[in-house]
Image (cartoon, rainbow, N blue to C red; front, side, top):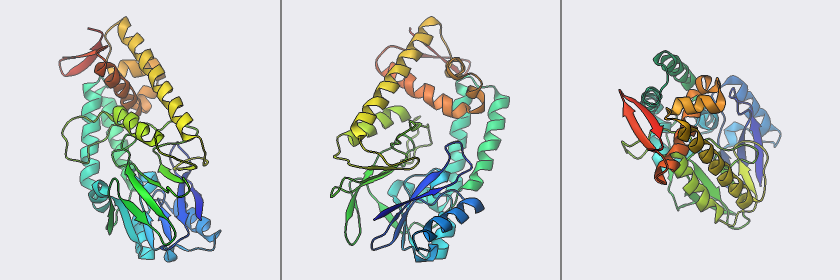
Length: 318
């Protein structure tokens, strides 16, 4: 039995779904952000099913975002549960500060390179650093591997690494009944944002997050999924049709960007302002990631080229 435990977060996305797998070992998938409100809610949701944090035997983290892993240290300490995560994610959960610093440095460099005002970049960097308080850390006692399994007494999940929304997105698939614990890889009502993040594999190249995400969705589309249990929102079926909708949405946006760039050369930030107005400043890194992801697709196709002048990149049709 898999129980859905919706937990409040301080973020725009709203509640995050934690999942209680009532099997041996008793397992919680994701834990919610590091806040008193979220902890109280987690205790209450567990209590509705006659469970307590102290009974948990295993904690599985689907990816690195604070709304999914923030309470990991508190829950692990109170329960003594094993903490389980993708092998690439292990160092980030155990000691998040170096990765958070590297990720912030990447974000700042990209925002400056693609046309953001340095004053805005400095303010956003301070906000990002403050958000680290929602995170958490704990020793990881078991690592998951792409193509491996996660076993219970009565069922076994396949483990698949599906980077794109984040570098560490991990999905768990039960081939016995088609259940897919999807984290934020695939959501029913909203599209997962392919955020550019510092690579977990030691790469020094800027990740092409949207390309990775499309490749990951393509792999998931081919799976015989029944019910998707997402990181946010209600469970749903029909994953292949939904993924096709996502592909169409991204293609439509790529065509919109191609049209804007054909009018005149533009920076990624200028494109974001054309599409989203003030959100290109208040949510600068999110909108920048969206634009760069779709520009990456256009560059792949030879439709757009990149030109750098005085450290700032403009995109044009050549």
